Amino acid sequence: MACAVPKTPTVADLIDKYTGTITKRYGRTKEATLATLKREIGCVKLSDLHAEVLRDFIDPLDKDGAGGVTIAAGLSFFGAVLTWTRAASRGPERDMGACALHADRGFQAQVSGA
Image 1: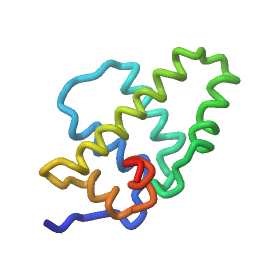
Image 2: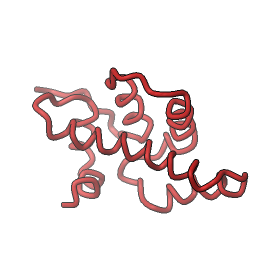
Image 3: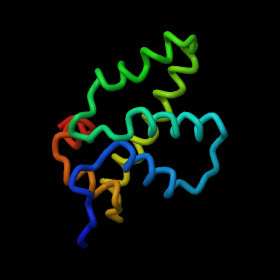
């Protein structure tokens, strides 16, 4: 099956695919957090996603007074997107999220631990 893969898949691509695929309604907090993640780090290519990117996302939140629980929830929501992407890449149906991972081997290795 041929996949239409963006040449440089980004964090925003994964978040869009996740929010477009998940049928379970989630709360306003998760929706707002995913929107913030998309706005702040959405343009980051998957191959450039590393701990420093997340640190650069978290530090301003911390300086603006966000508590540990708020920051942990944001990271948890982003973790859900990554976990979903990993599961989708191994599932029987190869959707855009899975194809994006296969197009970007560096990020795939980080997610799968390979």
